[in-house]
Length: 111
Image (tube, rainbow, N blue to C red; front, side):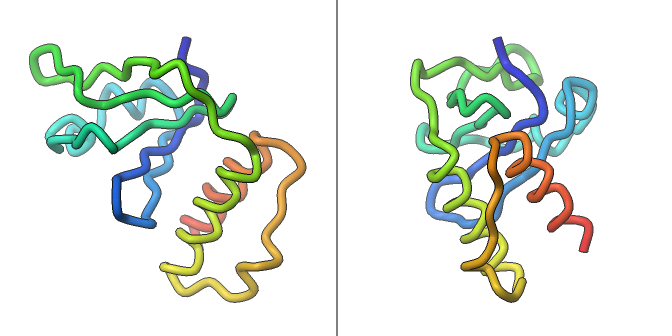
């Protein structure tokens, strides 16, 4: 079961898309309009990885890949995202939990 918040990671791109909750996922037409590659993933706050190639009608339905990402791996994604957006002191970014890492990404996107 998917736990919110979550992030979308596009293959070959350091930009991350932060998804706050189920309502945002269901109502953001841009999310569902995009054609996802097999390498594009959604990662939820527990670290669970979901594929984004399953479509039912106009909606994308994340499917668990049976994989999870560690806090360190997710922090690496967030650091790459922050560096790409021009944030300074990226190497110093740290979060003790996955939830804290997701909150940090949300904060970075508001700057």
